[in-house]
Image (cartoon, rainbow, N blue to C red; front, top):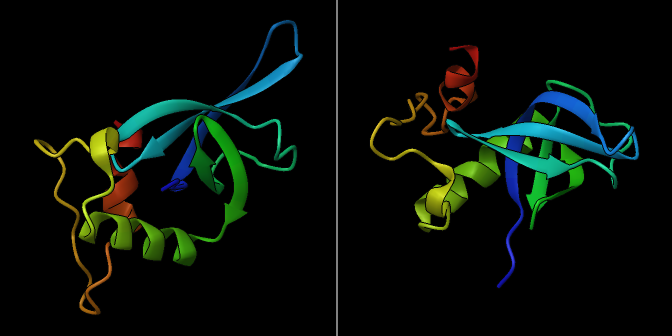
Length: 107
């Protein structure tokens, strides 16, 4: 089964003399790099779905929240969440607060 994981773009840089657009993306407290070549319109602060190191689509914050919550519930986040230091806050509706998901990017 293949999964695309939602994350928030923290920074963007050009690599290989500007030939490759890469981003640092926050996945619930863990930052990883991913290619933005399929999403030339993606910018810092956008939420994207990442599959095998490539951002494949932009999503809004609400969709990112829903997807992240579902993946957490079924135990499919793997190493993308620092489980020792990350406990997402739940809103009164039971949804994960993306402020909690992305709070570490400000540190």
